[in-house]
Length: 195
Image (cartoon, rainbow, N blue to C red; front, side, top):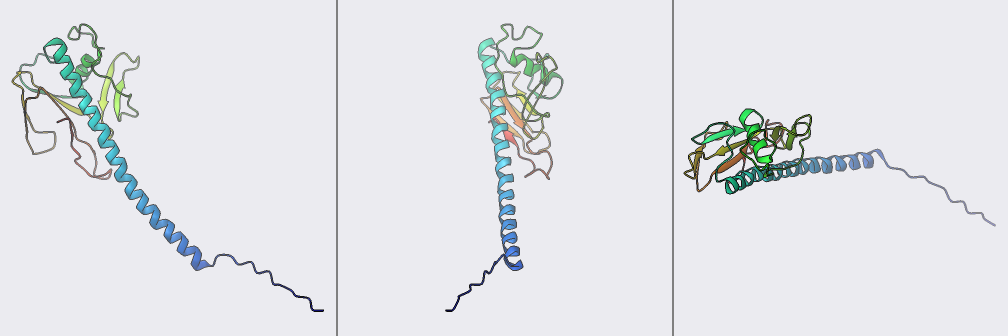
């Protein structure tokens, strides 16, 4: 009788096959990262748009309630506020109902939003949580708020760093953000506006 012997051959990947698999994975990863960065930038823009619109709605609701725009100073002509300094922060506190003054006498909360993380994407509160330290877009930039203090429902302004002038009729409030801060982050000059 003949005995049959089968060879046990352990066949693994060859070096060429392994390199082909690694190359395919690298190409797919590169495509995924490029698409992921674009999706993240779009999500940031949508978030910034929502925050800009909420500031505009808050100021319009304040006007409806008090028949005047919130004014952290003594303004009688159109003015721009920055949400990370001085009168801009006071304006946010008036709209949020946490100001010390009497403009929002009923302490109504017209503006609310998520809390910022690392000075990005939301409202940054003071240490006790009873004051506002600033409001930032998802890229860590401030919002700019234009208010129509001459009450002619016309705003004309040029956003920070741009050359285009916007002329808005029928508006008391306009809010915008510069968007991406640096060209390395994504597409630069992503103006996000509430109009």
